[in-house]
Image (cartoon, rainbow, N blue to C red):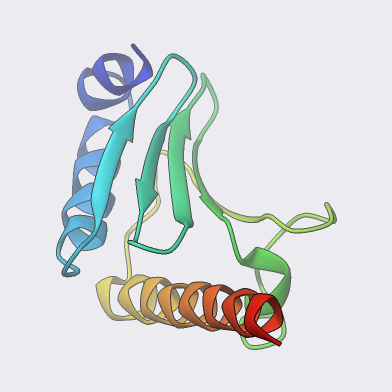
Amino acid sequence: MQFDIDSRGRFADLFLELRDIILGFDDMREQRNAKQTAYYSEYSAICFLRTNDQRLTLALAQGAKLQEIYSFLEGDAKIVRHIYFYDDSTVDKELISSIIEESMMLSLEHYELKRLKRKG
């Protein structure tokens, strides 16, 4: 599993620090699979962690919307944006917490809008 690789590998300290921040939110659950470790609120996916030889990637499920607030997010896919961490990276806990919190609010908002459309 990717979790085992990430939690013991080259970026283990960064991975575990980010994991602790993410799991610090109420109702956040972790799902480990072969390619990444995913984190979900009760409404939808929030983010994903994975490493490779060069970096650790924090992928944000609501990234395109988050990029309006956090312009430094990378990527040009339809939805997901990324933050990359390298060997010399440090984690700004306050910033990461803010991004995760905003992502959770966007997830709830998206869920509520879908629910309202079904009722409408």
